[in-house]
Image (cartoon, rainbow, N blue to C red; front, side, top):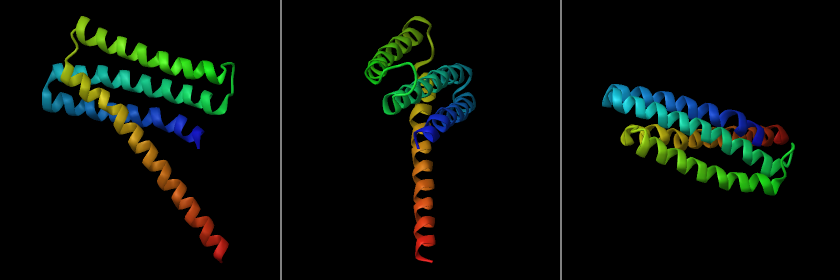
Length: 133
């Protein structure tokens, strides 16, 4: 299950970022569209980092210890906050567009989790049907 989430979650976040960037461009103009693209890029990179670190924490595989991976997850949050501050305060990215693009993280993770739940429920239903017959 974690392997499916690891591969599909960043992909869904990236697709949501593209959709939200397009909506930002169409509905809000170039400034909001660029802000949404920047926020979507941050969201996609954050989704990749979360899934990579979470798989290390749960599986314990690889060269990173579980405790160290959990510490990196906390450090990732601090880095994310610093990047968001720098983009908004120093580089002048549009805050509304950035927020719209960053929303791709929530949308992509929600869709990914919901789709995986539906697939698992279907598999359980099929297994129960086969067991009955």
